[in-house]
Length: 346
Ligand code: HEM
Ligand SMILES: *[C@@H]1O[C@H](CO)[C@@H](O)[C@H](O)[C@H]1NC(C)=O
Ligand SMILES: *[C@@H]1O[C@H](CO)[C@@H](O)[C@H](O)[C@H]1NC(C)=O
Ligand SMILES: CC(=O)N[C@H]1CO[C@H](CO)[C@@H](O)[C@@H]1O
View 1 (cartoon, rainbow, N blue to C red):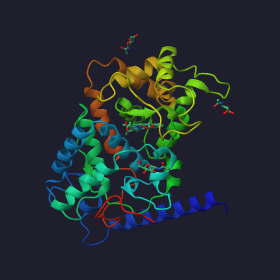
View 2: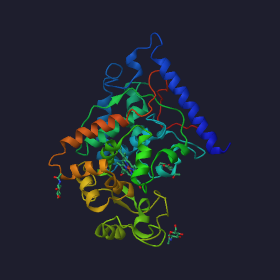
View 3: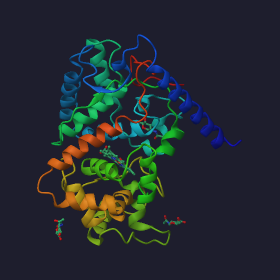
View 4: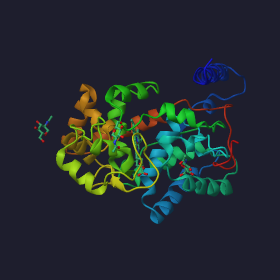
């Protein structure tokens, strides 16, 4: 058996085990039903200040460094897509084999912020609030503090203790994905076309290193050409910000190099301009532009690009984030509450 097959088999076994445990979890006498599923206000009894503490810390963190808002939103996406929302994105590996070390994760930021919130929570409610929930709450607060919607975040996740770089490589779509690839990556997590169009609105805030989309500007098909689906004026602007060479090649997206806003002109406000940008220019990443290539996602993008108010979008966003936040969670007796979020797995 090849390494890849072995790995798949291991994952399958873990999944079967998790499902079996979950199936039995509901029946175990004495284990209250409410402890075994996610719900709004999970900490109301055990740690009533939990959500307030997270919001207060987030205000302080973003006052010091506003650029961490998008980074912390992104962290929840990465945490949920890689082995479920289980806080494992925070774990460190001495041998460089953790999720943190995976290519798509190279430019992930905000680990210290999560650890800071966790340390604060440990002083008020020892061993009570999971890292996975802190990441989910921080993502919600990051959106809210970027003038986006407030929504009720479900809590009750436990933390996992496994972090494998390979999972991140396999579960996160690369930025040069087309819509068929994107739909495959998201349907594995039970997220449909509308969810994709809604969640991609996260790219309304934040920045990207040039390396993540450089290929579109200079060497799209390997013949030193430009991506024809990218608006020519936008491409010219990007070329000025991202001169050729220097920032890594091919699929590389991370490391040094210049950064550009993903939604130019509105890079730190959570609003609808991302959708207008995608429609008009093809977006920063091919995956953003790919929203135009499917009837469902395109229909949604066109609707929002023209919307006179963000209300409908904000409602859809809340629902999609809650849905994403349920991805393969550990609850009840599964998983643990760690004392620190960024412990070492090896
Ligand atoms: C196919 C799906 C996706 C792809 C290919 C993708 C790709 C990327 C890439 C390449 C970056 C730039 C990283 C860097 O160079 O610093 C980025 C940033 C970002 N992504 Fe995504 N992303 C996807 C989905 C999502 C989703 C669903 C969310 C939110 C739930 C999200 C939120 C963000 C945010 C907020 C940033 C800015 C981070 C910062 O400024 O530090 N992304 N994404
Ligand atoms: C352009 O892409 C081709 C094919 O991937 C590669 O062989 C070539 O080295 C690239 N050229 C530059 C200058 O990056
Ligand atoms: C959206 O706006 C464009 C022009 O910006 C217009 O051509 C189109 O008909 C509008 N679509 C809807 C559904 O209002
Ligand atoms: C391989 C690699 O660059 N991994 C990085 C992932 O992100 C963390 C946090 O920024 C870095 O410490 C790792 O070196």
